[in-house]
Image (cartoon, rainbow, N blue to C red; front, side, top):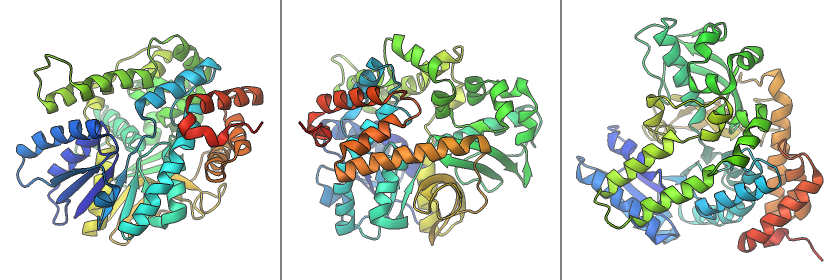
Length: 463
């Protein structure tokens, strides 16, 4: 079985390869193709994978290429994780937004709109290449903003495109661990992994904008056991971010990225005085990894692992500072988790072994507040026949307006890119809940166009 990673020089690619090395299924990936437009990044990541392969039995063959046709021809699965503008672009998005007193985070902030406006044209090129060279392939999208990009790809490739995120399964894992430690679920309940057959999640929303409203272990909803215990709520990451008072009021546990909405004033204040925004930190940190400092005696894998660990330690650092400052638990520093979700999808489809996963898929009537083609993040059944949304997912009442508005912003962003429409771009930015003025939206868009002349010139105001 062949897997192609678009964005093969991306820093987290070794996580996917490590998951592939651990896969012992009859139908497993035997050939991994890495595609990237940046030869230096591609070479650095290939060196890490080569070291992992040398220590493994029967590892997947690695093919690195800057030729999109070679990467896609006859492949079975495509994993899309591209970043137009790189981490420097992310840092610039954040800087521009903050200069207008607006949060610039790359998915839920104004930076996410800029990221999508740059990325959609590139994705359309990729879509045409997939239609030509790998028309039967399943596409697993991790390119941010994941909901927007997945919806664009689905318009051209249909339901063989699915978006993934590791946040929901990570949230559920932390809650199960807390309840197990408190003796509120059985000791033999295994740590939650993607596709666990003993644990079922009630979760609904959009990518990075959803809520866990039920957590069934062996058929019983155990989330109420957590919600009635403020002392337990504030022992895991999301609980410490949001606080017991808010979580008990919501009677649901929000996705970690909703911190930007529930505590936007505090997050903005911290971001404005931080020495490094997340994008700038990653740009400088990854530069050191990819360029290998003089005198560095570490192996490629050792240097990557050291960098990865530092990356995980600092994840959502400004949000944690806004919440009163706390360190991440050691268990949350091991992997991002998205690699396991991607492998679970491929495993379920290729081996026809059913799994239940939280995925980004077309709504198809599941959430009544949104139309059928709207990409939502909900529980799905995955097997040899593909991906099927499960009925019964429901938004909490307090989240319905947020989701409908966010989908409007996503749709205007898509229309702006597809139709080269400045008007739609302004509607997207001005209706974003973290932007409080149409005038600010105009200024922000003009600054983005000025700073990304190669990618956003199509949105320049006509004289």
